[in-house]
Length: 62
Image 1 (cartoon, rainbow, N blue to C red):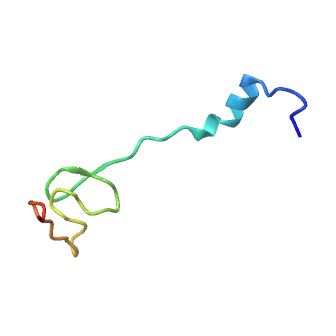
Image 2: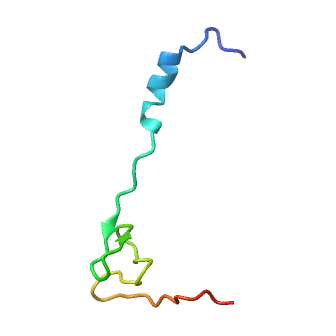
């Protein structure tokens, strides 16, 4: 079945108004000061919270 009438640009754009991407909120690492994603380990130093830290190798394994 084909649509009976063409959907107007206004109607299409109104329907898609909430599809826009939202900017990512970054937080600051408490240990090294680098920006990181919230609730995630820091990519620079591996710090997560006071109790947990992750060891990060600075050189790539070959």
